[in-house]
Image (cartoon, rainbow, N blue to C red):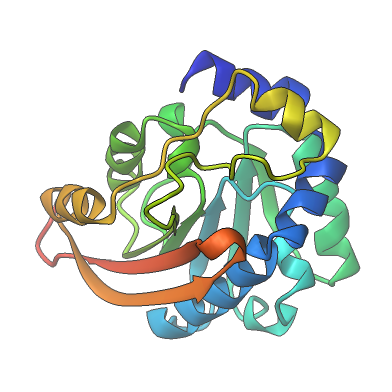
Length: 222
């Protein structure tokens, strides 16, 4: 992980500023809609193990019916302990039980073989190819990835000129997320023995889109 991005997400960005920003640009709401779609599309059996890596503060749980998670075993991870504190409170508010872990996906200590592994707007903040390799080593039966796509006139992950909460404004002075090209991600996942099953798109602010990609692990893989 780029040192400036690591510093931004562990020392600079506050949970309050992060949530205010994500809600204001519609990405919190869109992420929740896509997560609901992905869980339904995955066709999980009861008591399936769902792992959400890079879960952040769990803001999406404010925009999704928690009943969709209750038949399953839920694990949530993030790099930032203060985000996990907020996540723990939010899960309690919604009556959800989960294993909550501080974990770095690039050096993950997670147990493999989950039924559904979800990564929302995570790959943009790490070396995404290393991230794909890490996800594939965890060998989930299905893997759900949500990425951001921009209109042609915006190359940076954060829209130039958009008013930002103070800690995010400070973070983006040195930390620069990198968008993941969808075609390259598709190719990398295929190389990692994952086949695309489902794609969905939601529009967000500034002409951007969030795109969900649901992959199945190919049969016969070790």
